[in-house]
Length: 386
Image (cartoon, rainbow, N blue to C red):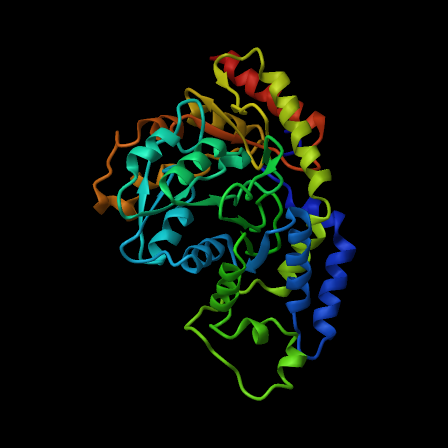
C-alpha cells in the first residue's frame, strides 16, 4: 500500500516551528513562577495587530470557552434566544445553553453549508438577542445579508469563526463583520496549539473588559493580567464577579503564536490544494465540489464534497490509506442530547440532506500536489468502479 495520507498533518506544522516551541518550553520550565501570561499577551497583541482597531483580542481556554465568555460578556442569559445553524459542532449550541439562553436553529441556504438569512429572519421572536452564523468548514457565511438583517432588527451579530481564521469575504476578514467573534485553537483547526485554546474578538472595550473579568475568577483585569511576579507584590486581590478559570495555557499560546506568524503562507498552501482538487474534480458531476461565493477567500479548514453512496466511498478510501471524515454530522437537532426538543428528521431538510452525503477530504499545509493527485485518483477509481 502507498504511504497513508491523513486528514491533516499537525506534526508537519510543529516541525516548522520546532525551535520556537522549544524556546517557549525552556522559558516556562526555567521560570520559578512558570508564568505563561507573557505568551498570552503576545498572542493577543498579534491578533490585534492583524485585525486592527477597534478590535480587542481576548484569549481563552478553548473555542467553547471563548463563545461562552463572549455571550456572557454581552449579557446574554436566561430568557434570551440566539439563532444559529443546525450543522455546526455541538459546542456552538452548548455554549448558548451554558449561559441559560435558548438556541434557535434555522436551516441552511440551499447550495451552501451556511445559515439561510431568510430562514433566520423567520426564526426571530421578541426574545431573540443575537444572530450567530457559522463560517462552516472555513468558508465565509453570507455576512452581508446577515449584517443587514441584524441592523434592521437591532440584533447582535456574533460570528462562529472557529474554522475560519484567515478567511475573508469581499476583503473583510471573517470575524470582523459584526459585534464580536470567536476562533478555536484546537490542534486540528486552521491554526492550532498542542491542546485547546480560543480567541474572542470584540469591538466594544467595555465588553472586552467584561471578558477578561469573567475568564479569570472575576478578578479585576488590571490585576489579573499582570505578570505573576508583579501580582505577588500586591496586598490582597479584588474580585468583582464570580468568574471562571478559562485562561489559555501559556505553552498553547506560545505554539499558536509561532504558527500565527505563518498564517498567510500556510493559508496559501491550503488554497493550492483546494485549487488542485477543483481542477481534478471538475469533470466529476457525481461529486459536488465546495461552493465558494463570489468574493470569498476560504480558510479551507476542510475541503468538503457531497457524494451519493458516501459511506461506501469513505470505506474504500480508508482501505487505500486515505483518511476522510464526516465532520459535524448528524446535525445537532438529531443528536441524542437534544431528543427532548422534538426536532426530529425533516425539521431542517437542507442540513439533513447534506449530512448524509458530505465527506471532508485531506487538506493541510505541507500537503503535496502528488498527495492531492493521489486522493483524486483514488476517488476517481472508486467512482469509476461503480
